[in-house]
Length: 445
Ligand SMILES: *Cc1c(COP(=O)(O)O)cnc(C)c1O
Image (cartoon, rainbow, N blue to C red):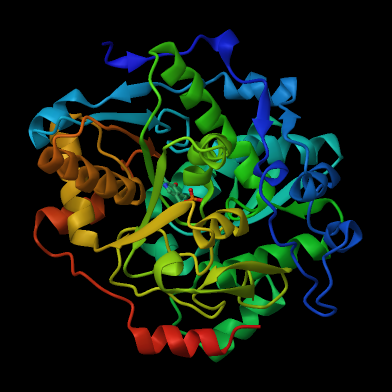
């Protein structure tokens, strides 16, 4: 069997798959009225086409030619057979990974950034604002806006701004304006700085700033890199390509694994296979998150805000509370307090299984991968890999030749300081304490 299964450019899927056609997802609610949000409510923030997609129940949504054109810079992405890893693990399982690290920003994130920039530019929007943690999303949007000649302002969580200068430089190289959050640019940022002068910042705070900036400026809208239905829709290109690639070699996967921060790359890879499972096909979906931010495994399934300032609609999701600030000792990414409502619904319905892993075992998996398959992957992606390795070891015990596929969301070339900590035995495992979870959950809604 080939080492890489490559789709031809002209065999790329021409439509995204919308899970809302097959699964009823609880509507987002207006924070004041608690009624489902109306399109008008979201207009100051999002492009009209994005608002339409957020609530659409159409199963297939055409990918515009202009988006396809940019996708073709790096898509279709390869599906690899990880034979060296199989040999290392001495497993009878066959391991595959879908490699999203080949995009210019190095992750799956431009799959939605390009679509969002396109729809906004078509509607006359000149600038997009957003938040970023480690910088992957900010760099994806910086790249995408540049492809459509737009401006981009990125509110970057302060501790990452200080600790991860290379992603900032990358965003600036694509022409983005990058601001450490909390900042002096917004009223909310000023307020947070006054109340907590030494805060490391959080995604929730940065989202609040980016939304405030968009609402106050007519030529500007806001863009979110994960969680929402339209983002998951755009990411379905991953799973649709994977499906075609498996068909080319006449294989159907038994298990699909991936990591979850807000849920977009895993959902993008898994959702196109979900209808098969609902029709009775045997397939298992496993998503993996850090024990330091255990949203799906320990959070509460309820309506909560997407941001700290409570400006977003209420989303029905597993959540650790909108006040959640992840521990600074955690190096492994994936720090958002909530997750995609679509993914949460499927976890709640037991169609998708969630697991949490400690950072040392995650980096150990990443290290094995680098030494067998060669790629140095993002710490985020390595959570999904840890699930793959666990399943492959199980196959060794039972002798089952399962097909395990892994959404490998990005490369780790900007995460080398975390690898350095791991290589020197200086990473600490951390489990977010139950009392703090209970405390945070009390403040929900
Ligand atoms: C952002 C990111 C994630 C987490 O986000 P999801 O929305 O859960 O996909 C995972 N991997 C990489 C490489 C990322 O950049």
